[in-house]
Length: 454
Image 1 (cartoon, rainbow, N blue to C red):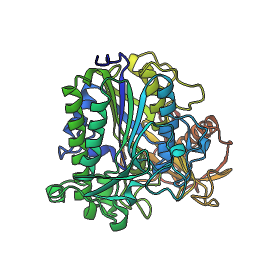
Image 2: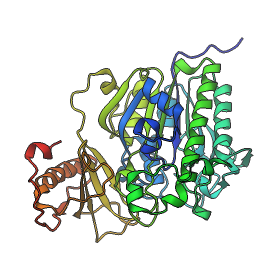
Image 3: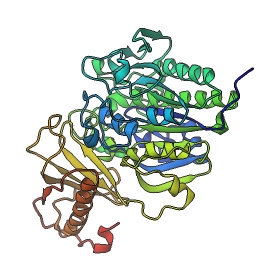
């Protein structure tokens, strides 16, 4: 007798790497790269302001696996393994009767595990087809993942398709459910050994020179060299999303499967520092996020500031699983249902690799501080910070005019400083001393107290 399908919703995470929010049509990209994501956002729930809490691969993944800040788990930079005694989404779903699977890039195992990952370092997942640092064990047309026995498995096709085919096979084999599947693509992350963004053959030519986001047009970096390939990778990811939805529909699983699309961080193409992320600018921290399926279909566009750390409790809540009190994020289900009355006005961002810094972002303002006496990658935080920048996102959404030294905006900086210190303490950090930036006379109109709190 065939097994009866579960009434519990299946849950799939479609996780990309280094994808900018403005790579999508719903965020204004004119190249028609993401019709499947755009449809998902329009018909499901679109997180308009989705902000990573850590613009670095490993730390961001630790937050998404645990619902805890990277300073709480200790995974504040790449190369620090996820603590074995820290519960993960896989543990919570497994306790609720789900089978669990992981496919793609992990980046949370101890040093020395470049490809295969020991069972005790896999975050509790049952099925395993992954590489710890996928960018080091694969290339655009050479994909090697590692199975439960740590044996290498070579998959055919362009890397996005190779991984997506494995995802579809998993869904087909586990269609009676319930299952929780986390799939982590490397695209549109750069290929490290050639410092390039290799798309499928023919895709670079399709998009090269077509459209450049305003920050990249103003600041340059490597954008003109790399955008064609980057956009091509985004396009192929969206085609993979469409194929996954086709598979769910053909198997009769679409209406009973929660699907989350999000990314770990974005990409500034060497305009804010010497590489591609690791800053608190929008081009590093703002990512595309949408959800579909039970509880999310018809959810509309959420305008609140929503952090990557809010997504783990959201998935548990949507699946009817108790959200642990120790999780530091909040489920967005009350926002969708219209029952939330105390949602934070700001998103909180930590960075402890390349620099030690902290930031808060409201709908209008972005404020960031830096610890110049601390070493990024060695120190998780600091007792003393110096103001680094302040942006008015209402009139400067691409952060091209730093206002931190403008006397006209001191009231804004002071208000945002209070917000930042409060959020740091809530995250378990010690309240720091923040040194004001040097003040300059600007001749601009002084910002009002009401504007400062927007």
